[in-house]
Amino acid sequence: MKNIDRREFLKIAGAGIGAAGLGTIPGCSGNRSGNGSAKATDGQMTYRTNPTTGDNVSLLGYGCMRWPTIGGGSARDSDNDIDQEMVNSLVDYAIEHGVNYFDTSPVYCKGYSEKATGIALSRHPREKYYIATKLSNFSKAAWGLEESVAMYRKSMENLQVDYIDYMLLHGVGMGSGMDELKERFLDNGLLEFLMEERAAGRIRNLGFSYHGDIKVFDWLLENHGTYHWDFVQIQLNYLDWEHAKQINPRNTNAEYLYGELEKRGIPAVIMEPLLGGRLANVPENIADRLLDREPSQSIASWAFRFAGSHPGVLTVLSGMTYMEHLQDNLKTFSPLKPLSEEENKFLFETADLMMNYPTIPCNDCKYCMPCPYGIDIPSILLHYNKCVNDGNIAVKGSDSYRKARRAYLIGYGRAVDKDRQADRCIGCNQCVPHCPQGIRIPHELRKIDMYIDSLKKGGI
Image: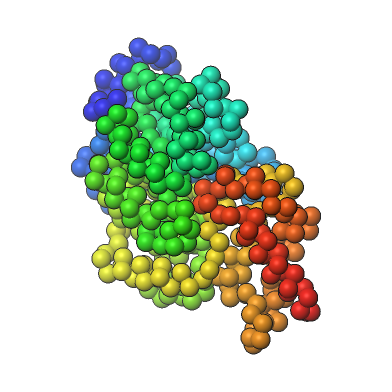
């Protein structure tokens, strides 16, 4: 549905679906311009304008993968039930302060994110928010057209809506790359179906989220003239801008991904602006460097400002479990203070310094879970990364060996249950195709297990 105004959209949507829930098309109130970016004053959210539909989208988007649970923690990490009352409070506060883009998926929060998001958002007028969700047909059992369409219908039911504002093909480039793209979306006629839904008004914007195989990304953009992508979701942050491929050969530098979208005029939605939290929990010397420069800003705000400063970015997603996360991010984007050329240089130098720390590129997405042998893969990898960043990797013969060794072993026992540790891995490789970062997980688990074994033999 190209270059269509809101009245025309309502006519199309009204012909194809019931009128219930269709007030005016979303675009919450605020001081906005239609030239691609908003004129925001102090305390007001910055907005960007989608060139295809005219949507005025908050530059801060709410990622609904980490809703809070009863008893604490996020539903991404906990088996506890989602705290719906807290979700409602977070959504209310976000909308009150100008956030209008909410990104979810049928697989987030162990399958409960869409429902919780729908309950919270349905308490507000439909024109106050945009909903983004995904066709998350990762399982081969869901690759048939009938099964995938059923997932799409279920998303509408859970979200309590009659149309989806932003629909994504989820995780293209993962697994077997082009072969998997064809089986999940092309050969079964699913992409054609979604395009028909867009023409009928039940999908307002159609795009995809990209992970992994660059051939898939390039092919989809080469065929932009056929599919008319309204937006594309990519991983972008100041470390991945030039170092993504260095971190993991399977990844692609964000500079290339963003540049390919920008030259085609396709808006970019940004995921992983904090690189799975790693750019909020940086090594001590990096934290000091950032805080010395801007003592009043959080460490995370540097990463969010970097992502939001690119003019082709429509919104920057953040999974905000706690109210303090939401409030800090609102401070960064209300309004956004774009990075200067000198600040960009400062961040690129910071990224170069961070590459001295050989962390494993785990973003804690948990797509590798559950492990058939009960291994807590993300916790093992993230504990290792934390120790690297904190300088607690024990080097035999160094002055800090005993302290670092003790910190690693004690922390490991607290972070990972004994029956879920790395020594349980048998190398079945079931997790590997599901990792968006292409991590050779059994290989990394073996390395960590060997390291732990050597620490144990060294004595306390």
